[in-house]
Length: 381
Length: 75
Image 1: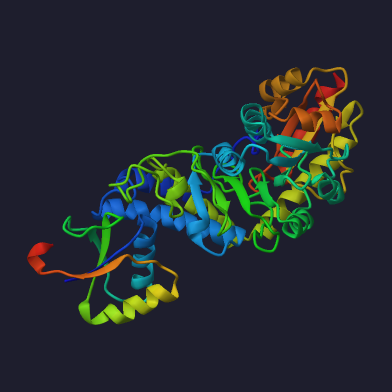
Image 2: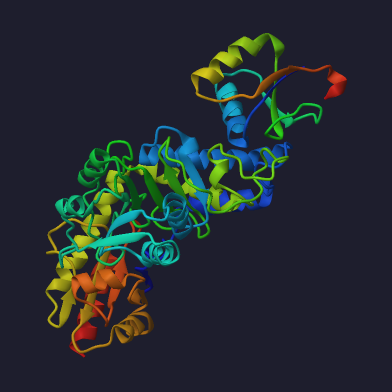
């Protein structure tokens, strides 16, 4: 039996229609978007427009022009962080962030003298909005919060934080790499100014797609400058969105896949996907909790979270556990630090790291039971 | 021939979608170089539908750059 439980790295399998959409684009469209006006080139442009429309619908953005297409969530986070911050600015972020936030933030801090405060989450991953409020200073420009932890799946209280940032006139950037597609998002109701997403995880498309929602009125310095197919006589980047932040050839066939993925999600409903994934995740958590020697990280198994479970087997190296799971049992997991050392320190799994199992709604109860049994056998060795 | 030009590809493609969804004529064509415009695509439409198209685009928040009347050979 082969069981794929590495969906937080990239989702697999994809819905049938995603494979078909990419294949169709590659064979029958092929052309570059936004640069020419023959039918195939226009069709390619329509794919990008459709991607913006569908993603805007998914995250409840008011205008598809607010959806900037990028190459992954890291690209989008760099675009936001480096586009917003000026020397002298202060940033509030949390101990649950991925290196895709921590590294650009530290880079900006080192180069320009931006300062930042890391708000400590509880060992369960719980983030107290009051602590965010308390960390905001007069010079604070930006608050950055990871929506769903890529380590333990816990969900940050976005609406509460968004209310605080709105009241204080501070920009709110959400890292939705693990949540866009499997957790309800409403950028308007949640007071979100900037939201970075990826196309290849819960949006069910392929690698090389990601993007940034930018609330109307928020101006970012361009992070990538170059050809847009518009205002071509000008030597400088156009100011109009989305061209202001998009330069160079887009991953058109990739976006054809994301369109099909988001349609699949909208047809099923994000809430349905979330409920299905939680049923499986809870089953996994409860099963693992009964195994002696297995240490689970994060809150009690009854607390709902994203489809991500981290554990270790006492006395066994995590890398060895991951290797045995793959080689002996055909279970694909991820081991190590998952690019999030601060979150490991928060939950108590630093420096050893953890074994991470991450699910999608395509997993089955049978696969989960097989995984629990396999880990039970491994822990009994 | 009546054409509408746009400030960006995004707006040109949005215009095409709005016009076609309403069942009106609209085809994206390369902008004749004699017209100075930000975006290389223009929307060619039926002259008698111009007012209707402009109203639809306005309602949908699609920004346009200009409206041009061209002799067919200028195409």
